[in-house]
Length: 310
Image (cartoon, rainbow, N blue to C red):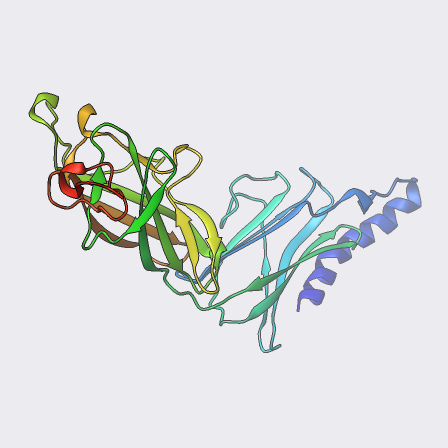
């Protein structure tokens, strides 16, 4: 049908060129400069919509049709979509050489070959191809949250916040480092972001500090976790990023109004096709003398509880 349509559309043009060439010599347009600069394919599995865009030479008047053919890997599916450059159906700007279209399309889980074609007035075809992989989408999972206390002398240890607090030093800054172990069956590239929020409503400081905690979860653009490495089946993200130059979140010592109490952390993982996954983790901040000090890992910082250190 497409060939009959193209033949029918181009027939009057060919006839006109033949007649014109009899009365005057004309210069045929050079279509060798027409090219597909970019071919964009964006398939939304949630809404079963596919956005197609072919970027050609700007305002090229020699183009008669732009379309995209889609073929399935098992050869049981093929279809064709005609794109427009008239600010309609997904196209934003008219007559700018960018042809677009937004279409409803339900695709099964397999690979598809997409051929974009630009047809000129003289019948020249310019082709650019892409492969689209449609796979079943899985929500990301937070397998594990790993907490570290890091000291100013670069020593550190891992602790379990479910049964052990984060210990604040009396006079030195310490650092809280957090890693998330995330599983996403669709791969690392499917993860959009990993962020965290903090609620400090239950934190207190010494009376002389005049500390008033902020209500609710606090969130800032700089509070995100960076990809660090991967295991056989998971991805490790760490709070140390381009904005956090320290080995972790700096925690003030008690002498500089360091705060104690329970802080709530919320970790949020978002991927391309699922609702964000969030998990909350409470963390107790304690000081020397509260009866929680880990003397095996950090004896010298709390002689009141630990006594003499070996």
